[in-house]
Length: 344
Image (cartoon, rainbow, N blue to C red; front, side, top):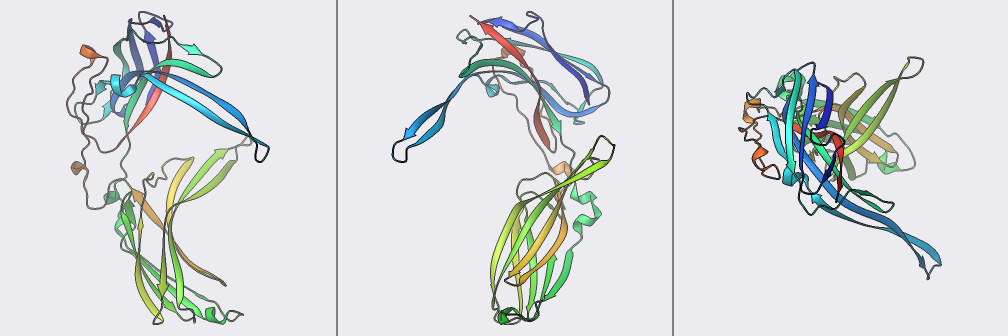
């Protein structure tokens, strides 16, 4: 874990430069323990942006209208000048422990406009340091319950009432071949319905819910808990009953989402699959947990490879060469930025 971090400018301690100058600096990291990081990138970014609102009058309805206009120009884009300053060479994806110094140099173009902060716009330049962190893999092959099938039967007797077509019991059986899935996969849901009502048409819905649990301590050191649920996928199907018993399938595709996790003491994410039949007099609902991972069942870690290739840019000879890096899953996050100022 990175405990301290700073960017130093060697040839301009206050970060003030002119067009055509070379930015000579260094990034200093201090880590007290080994951190899972695949690479470190440094890049410079500069852009101009204007934005303001315009008010007009709608003569037809005699009402004021307003809309926002804006423009943006990139002078130094990250994709044009980024370079790898450190990368793991032994496939361990570990940033060594201790204090590390990464020197860098940028040659600035001659046609850059100066830094400016105005009421309706600004021109800004900044140095960015980006860590390519390795996200821990949620391997479904190492979760014993992920391979277990799910089977659940529920029923409800809708009794007698004004709507005679819906009187009688309905039995719903849901079968899912396994409990663990990854984003992008289809969940095959096998359903069996015994319909003892007179209604021949029923609508069934399947939805995947993401349940997040948040915990925090108040001033009295009492733990407070909040829950939030979000529907991330849904499928519907209209069923027609020629006979009292009907068997069918519903397929639900899992979108891109964070895997299930409960190893954080203050925040956790779980998923539930909900199957529901709606009638005017009520509903019949079947719900059970689903595990979302990042490595699917039957796939081993050594078959998942990610490749990184160097990008040429403003660094020129300062951009180091590096070997191909293998990893399983990663995320890019900007660790910190330092503002620069340019003057003409």
